[in-house]
Amino acid sequence: MSAATSESGIPGSALGWIDERYHVRDLMMFLGKKTVPLGPHFVWYYFGGVSLFLFLVQVVSGIMLLLYYQPGEATAHESIKFLISEVKFGWLVRSIHSWSANLMVAAAFVHMFSVFFTRAYRKPRELTWVSGFTLLILSLGFGFSGYLLPWDELAFFATKVGTDIVGVLPGIGEFMLVLLRGSEEVTGATLTRFFGIHIAVLPLIFTLILALHLVQIQRQGMSEPLEWKKKPEGKRNTMPFFPGFLLRDLLLWLVVLNVLAILAVVFPWELGPKADPFAPAPAGIRPEWFFMFMFETLKLLPAHMWIIEGELFGILMFTLGGLLWLLVPFIDRGTPDGRQSRWLFRIGVVIVIYIVAFTLKGYFL
Image 1 (cartoon, rainbow, N blue to C red):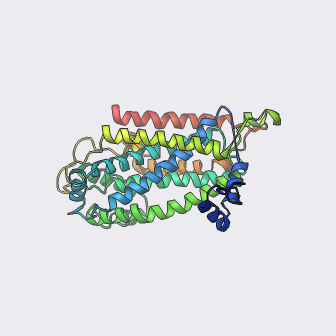
Image 2 (image 1 turned 90 degrees about the vertical axis):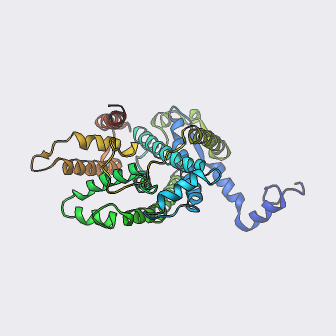
Image 3 (image 1 turned 180 degrees about the vertical axis):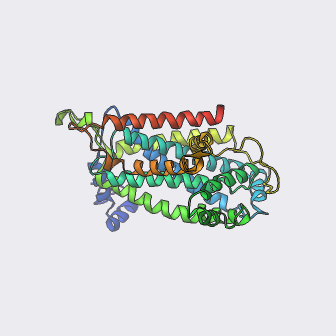
């Protein structure tokens, strides 16, 4: 063994010193023993890592924005305006933060549906599905709470419409509305509450559940596709997680970073006129794209459905649908050969088509 290599097998005296105290070699050996099954569904394994990378971009860019952002009805819009016009590369940081938020939600949706259609939620990964779906819901919460923070015209009225929907819930609607807004109307108190939710409450909960989700994945490993498991042991192609899969994952992160930079430069995130609570709502008020399918559905419902209001009926159906989706691993008993039930597979296809179709309808029809 050369002098430049420590007894642990890690080159360099500094890394050897670290390994002697923290047993880095054991971690590397553990990662080296892990394998990733290669098959027709191999490409879908990367979207979870892409979602994680974009969340890290969110954290870094969000911290940079916090250095200049001043929450408050009189200061929020002005601080963002100052950031994008006076601070060097401030416009770029804001655009990266906004674009990465949208791409993170998109990657999380792709990851969720790839897990669903490959039935990667089956035993023993039921709770991994539950934690992953919870992370998606929290990501939507990030999008909703962060949308108001620039305090521009579109964000103000979109938040008013979104929180009005909460107010129609029977019994708890009025309480939830005041809890979210801080009063009966969208005011500076609403902005302050959304700011606290966005930078403190949601990140804390998200980080804890993300840590649990990653531990679950590391303990249980990558889900093995059914077609791959049917092959004889000698013909099951695998790739070491470290360094093979990890290096490919990092390379994809670099590609995503380049795509993110191009979007941020070519399509910088705009800042609309400052919100005026006394002005009429501008035409074309609509939510972020990931809420569009729900928004368009509620618009199509009649004023009353049987004995309840149409909007309330829609909210209850979305809530019920979300709960059933959360329980998919416990509902799907599969087929004798391990494949997903046909009826559940078809429901999944219908849901994907519905989300895509109604999202496009909101933008183009």
